[in-house]
Length: 238
Length: 238
DNA sequence: TACAATATACGTATGCCGTACGTCATGGCA
DNA sequence: TGCCATGACGTACGGCATACGTATATTGTA
Image (cartoon, rainbow over all chains, first blue to last red; front, side, top):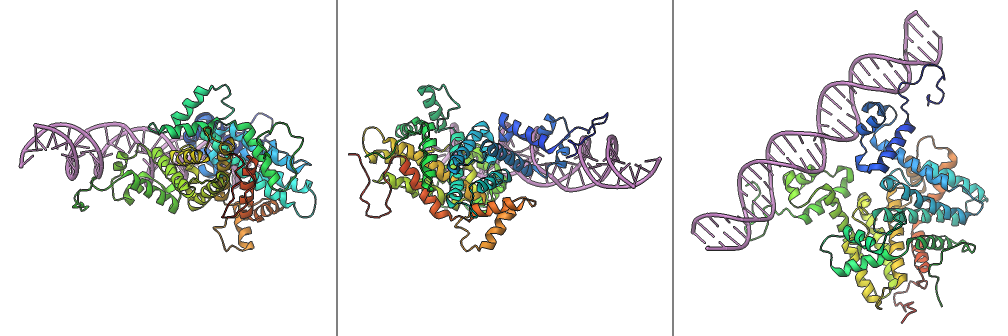
């Protein structure tokens, strides 16, 4: 990292190529034009550098993708700082994963390649363990991390796949939604199946997500969050 | 080419190249050597055909991957036939997704590319809607499908990422598990983080998975499922 | 039976991709 | 001042998906 300690005088680094800048540019490209269109040559061009210069900061393209993944997890961790209330922290973790998935739908495929316990997340987890006190971490918290993260990732993937209605398509009419769903289906899909698809996609995602997260957290042994707004999905009725 | 002996019968195609055979071979290759090593040329070679012959049955490589995805969903659907007990069916759906992910960990990335509501799954969903009766599908069931599927997919992805302990690595000792976890982490990861990772991965996955599925299903409004075969169903509605 | 139409198999060629390797410029340090 | 580690760069190579033209087996039709 000589870039930060560079002398402020007349001389500067050659091009200022840096792992961080490369990763940021890669994420920009993925967000803008999809994972397919991320190529080393195009990336170098967008940075005003020669192709092979990138390899001074990145071992391979896979390494680059891993770095992008880690960066995304860093975003997630920043959105879910440790809290004194473990259950509440789990909620914020779920929301952070889901929101980050919404912000970078094209990058979702690589979120898991670097493992689901990358250092940035581990940092927050360790901090949360400390906060929750005790010599041994609370098993409820341990279980909650795995299950909540799995659910949020799956939810984000499902959303990005395009069939679950997403709030990012905010002002979508019912007709538009049906168009979108049917377009994603093979042309000769029987009407029964199209009807089923429309029914499934007609559900409101927001309450579903938060209610499921709450249910999972409760299932881990935590008290149900009473002072929560919303989350009025069906509770077991008499 | 006269090299291949033609079947003397009255079969249809020349070499027997078929979309199904191609898809099956592609899945075999993915399972055996990973998604990276699936190439059109290698696939054709393994089928004893010329490369471009594949394109008579497959529009593009993406189309092929979509077909593989659909095939996987067909496996899932076959493992989760419609049931008279909706809550029980949701459980079997979760298990089917997770088991299929275990059987094809290398193919998990493409499970979602074709959308999460592919025809094979829609078929079962429609059937399940019919079974549950009523003119309108039960909203609990609609919510359950989305949330259970999202959780199971996320769980499978997490498992395939290699950090969550998986039962496929059955006879793993504690030491081996730690080795596996630490190997997946960057070499200079601080001890605190390694400890946190080990703690998270030390949890037993089996009860976590089924308990979370049960919690989600319950969160959708279904009665808590008692795991008895002679199920007196928890159907509260006429 | 003969022949036309069609579907399928195949070879070649093209352009893009990741990246190994060698070279050269830079600037900090002795 | 001279040295050398670091980083930027050009060239080259093998592998990839696939567009296009062509050959051949099968089927429908007369």
